[in-house]
Amino acid sequence: MLHMISTFSLRDPDDLEGFQRAMTRLYTHLADQDLLVRVGAICARSADTPMDSDDERAHALCFTTTFTDQEQCDRAYRYIERKGSEAAIFHAQMMACIADDAVFSCWREMTSFS
Image (cartoon, rainbow, N blue to C red; front, side):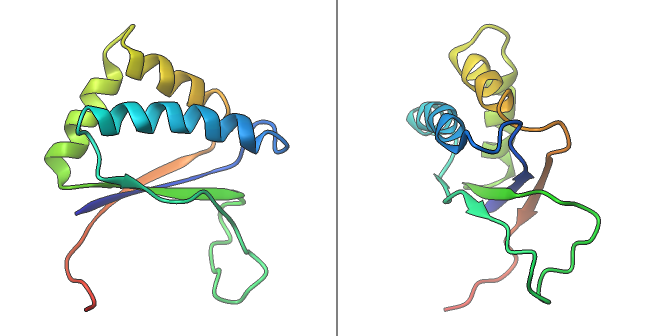
């Protein structure tokens, strides 16, 4: 599996529902196209614990997107990049809710706990 961690803040911190609606449109569409496995919950950062050691960023939220592998992830990326497509429109609507300093990183599973 490949996991993309999206770490970000909202342009309007009071519009989590608007962001969630936009996110749901995009990820439901991608799932219907078999371009992802699942999307995790939107999580609020708990920076007030010693376990949080990221002093470089002040992002308030994150979620994970899981793909079967990098090939599926790359197919999803190419699909979203198609100008004028539903996915491109849904992605633009979601990204319009996110502040410009968002960070997206992808992580490939190497082991798992049983």
